[in-house]
Length: 406
Image (tube, rainbow, N blue to C red; front, side, top):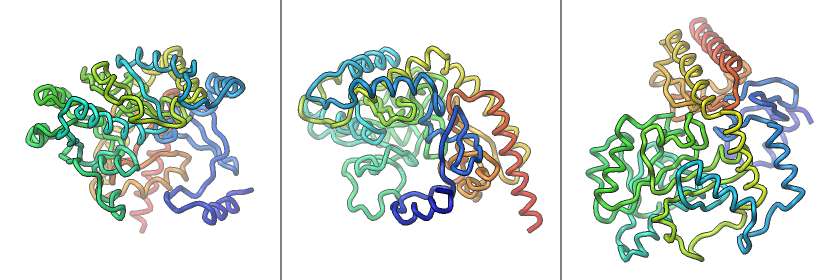
């Protein structure tokens, strides 16, 4: 089918939960995507920071094919070799001690919430159920994670939110300090707010949260769903500040495009979710685990953490130059590694530029109201970064010319 027929079928058969752009992806290779009509796009979305190895990476392709011939799913009534090995390799790579596997970032964040509350329940501190979260945060779309997130619009129409979750301004350590109390189980935070606008934690903020948690006997838990697995130039973004969480939620890049999520915990939380208190039918299945192991191996063998750092600096410099050339539209850039944003002026809507960028062969996403987010594969080349910046510049110039003419 061609684009017109497929889009008509999509409108007939798919729930209108999303607002996808009017083209249909057919295939990809590296940092490129091609639609059903053969048009080429630079993919600086990468499945929203998911496809860290790009599209069609030959090592990942072989791993999926080979594992599919062995065993795909076993359930958690039995151990499977790939999952045990992934748990070991992931803990070694991150400095955590134990792993729980699921299928998505939302599930990983919900596991963190349950872990925090159950931990204090087992210690006899049943009043410690409060979670301190942050305005503009995003942790998923389940009822619990929508409550944990800091965007009121995502909760409208779904009934009463989960009790015991409070939100304070991101980066405001004094606000967190005022919110602390003996009933707080955990502070849950993103080292870089992704959906909230690609906002890195201010200097000293994560360190301050760690200190507050230690002073009050609470847990510090982190959402590294978007920032983890090398996206910011370190295996975990929290490493930039030297802060170690008690538990962390991972997903996205861990599967390189294949669905997987994980919660990693330190040893003092190893017994906080005893047998029967949590689970996942597909979590830790052999195929997803083999994919996760392959991603970790390729990250190391191809030096992709360093590539994310160097490529991120190049992309950041390019976005800063674009912002300087278009001051009527832009006010700068921000981010870490290959999680970057072109920050638009207040009142300029980021989503309005997604279509024009696509028409110029560049796929990006919006983060918050006024940030264009760039999350290319970690394998992106310098030439592709330069091409993306050039296409962005051309698109903004065309927009300004049209506005002047109109």
